[in-house]
Image 1: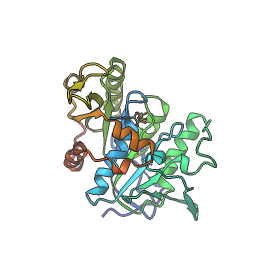
Image 2 (image 1 turned 90 degrees about the vertical axis):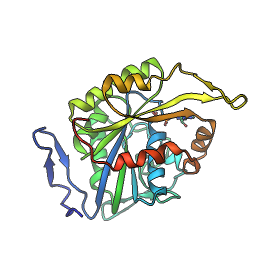
Image 3 (image 1 turned 90 degrees about the horizontal axis):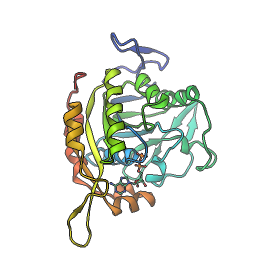
Length: 274
Ligand code: ADP
């Protein structure tokens, strides 16, 4: 186990000139994996939640950091409503049914529909606090649900949290394909490793005839993987069950093989050249 350092201690990623936060005080986070998308609405939060659930069901200690400060959706997926407690200046995460430790701005706002109308630096500060000022305890994995896109907010997270790698989410729409390539380029420019790509909303299986319907057009996942050189982790079809369980705060009940299959990839060492 690595020795915990004071949160104010910064470590600089060699050669990159980027300052990253060290282990939070009194906590130890094994591996930090961020989930990113080129744009909103492609299922980034759903994939973050399902990855966390799959890891927790395998027996790992898992945290889920909702870094989407202006559009937080993680607590709703897990049906978490009560306020996070703050003790001695440290945020105590809310715990989901399967034991995932969740931190989100929505668990700290007076009302869950209160908007967060802050400028970039303030938002960046909160994300950093969600790393340093949370009693995460011993975690094998911390999944970070990034804000969508390639703007200031995801950039701050990429630059400040010591990420072990990213999972990229896209959907087959043309626009999503174009912007996901931008996101991948941005991550590469920041020298962060990528585990691979998940194509979400990849068709729908007709409940009547069992044939796939390509609602957003043909899958573009192979094309994106080939063009960018990243691994295709898998495709997740549109499934009314996932949508229903998410809306009712019961995403943990959703079972899908894909995420179990991805777990060994997340435990592999990742190279920066990836
Ligand atoms: P993002 O985080 O990229 O904005 P979300 O994960 O919030 O996207 O998903 C957007 C909406 O689409 C949500 O209502 C979610 O329940 C739904 N959704 C996402 N993926 C699927 C899927 N594979 N099948 C059905 N609904 C989905």
